[in-house]
Image 1 (cartoon, rainbow, N blue to C red):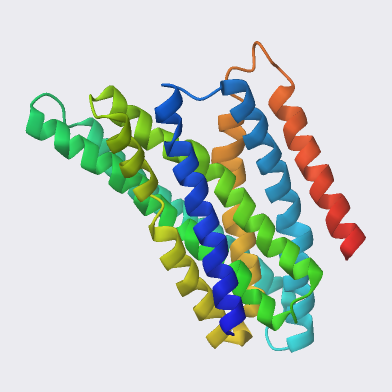
Image 2: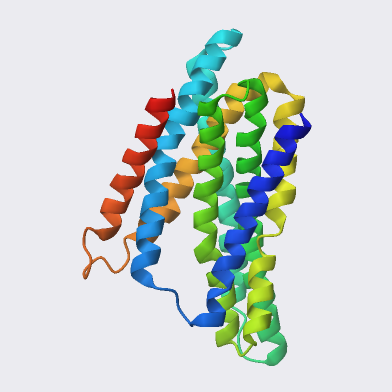
Length: 267
């Protein structure tokens, strides 16, 4: 059990590190390279979509059938939908906080409130992402630390981590534009990802303590991944596609193909 918890902690510390790397873009330039970012996000989206089935949903269905009890299709479907709804609800909270930030303008005190709301919105968004990573690693104990299960958990962490890069920049760069120093912009940007290790450990503990929910937890992580990929990564990587119409799209295809190849080979 301790090994699973430590792996979840290490993975979410990694996603926090990627947030910090995104925040560090404020030190070098005011905006990150769009083409490189789109390729990275597209590849991440492809990986996450492929991993959602081969590394999460398929093992969830097999595990549910082995355990008996509720029908496997019901467990997998309900878990998948709950994961997607959970991420959707968290996005609603973020959107509400973001609207509050945008409505505050003008005076120095009001500007400070806007900054606080900006950091808070990204921080709230990182909590369910950390939980998704923790849940994915928590399921390893129930799967006997299989190579397929480990790849699925690592894929969740990588996908969430890559998504965190632009989120770190989304905090630090606006802060710089508000007149904050590069150092303060970086510190506040990376701080928005500090909640992920805490949430990751909690997610792993939940699954480890209640092994019977393993199929549901695997499906939950898949639903969370699909929503993040479809709602955030794919639209984001398709920006500015007039100049590079197939660049991000080929990144998605390549990411899906690589993940499919690795999962089938190791499965």
